[in-house]
Length: 480
Image (cartoon, rainbow, N blue to C red):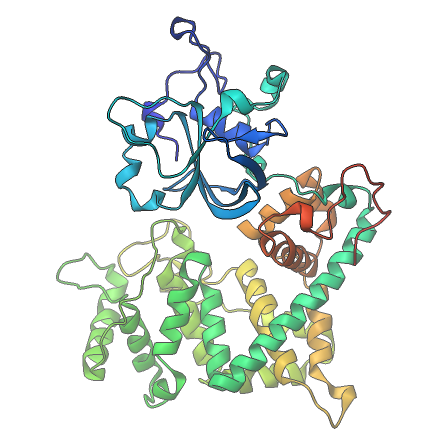
């Protein structure tokens, strides 16, 4: 990643600077990253050792620790190599930034530099090097106003795909029809997955684990899933009181703070003492789960999400499959089914006002917002009804059909990083998503196409059936 403290001051707010005293034009690393991301390079590329280079995928722009671009796919003399890419102004910066001793950089396959210059005593790098001063496209100056770093949006970190022309030539109705087809395929895939999970672990345990996994965002999906697996329903049912089950799940998660070392909110002091007593009596040990707390919003804290999961578990009387069956049986229309599944209680007032046992919230809020409730309905509950709701004796009462109808008509859910990447990959401009993605099914269809084409092929547009080949008249509509 770019070390901002080592980046020189830029001129006029641009991402580049000209240093006449050194006899050459030097750019900031930010600008060089943009050059690579926008593929502003000549068609014929060669590394410093003479190796021919062809870019299948430039990788995803990394905004966290580690190499600047990750999961790239490059052809070196027609040999496919996958890995990471690091960008510097000079080759010597690799050593100046200490990458030679950093395990995060062991997967780097290409070093992008403006100038290939190593200091005396510095060994050649273990990866290939491309000199951007020789590779940059001619007349690049006319693009500078478009890629000023101060106005370069985060969205542009995802390159437009080779299929974007097909999407652009189709009207919104045609695109939505295509997305609806992809959404049905995604629903079938989710249904099959839950059928397999139900056969392996039982419907109750499978639904419990998938629901808890859905409570966490991407970074905490697995800890929530492992918590549900470690606190299996079979074990929880042996404890007759709901307060016991709460204490056990909080204890296994490692969410019970030590009141002798931490300032506990006044309204939690009595209940926390009870939790600790019940937890000690259980004789269990915490699961040491790898929770990630720093990046989440206070209203989406792991503790609040777990309390929401506990409320749901109690609502189902620890029989989630039977609870879901009852809801789907009572609903006569897709709308009734959607409303029943998305209607969640706000939660206890003490938790509406708290991030965890030690920190309060300025503004109270429900434990589970409408967006997350819809997300759980889309990804877990409706597919579960379809997986286990088939009635071979009476097709008119086939609850799986009702679940699919509800799934296809559910309003939009909250965007995630995968959906944003897909929009910037397919749509020109990406803001077209506001017109095209009007239901959760449209969003699901977009993600399904992105995963099964772009990600599965490592963004290799040349070998993707959705791509318009250069020089060929594109078809009038989308594939499908």
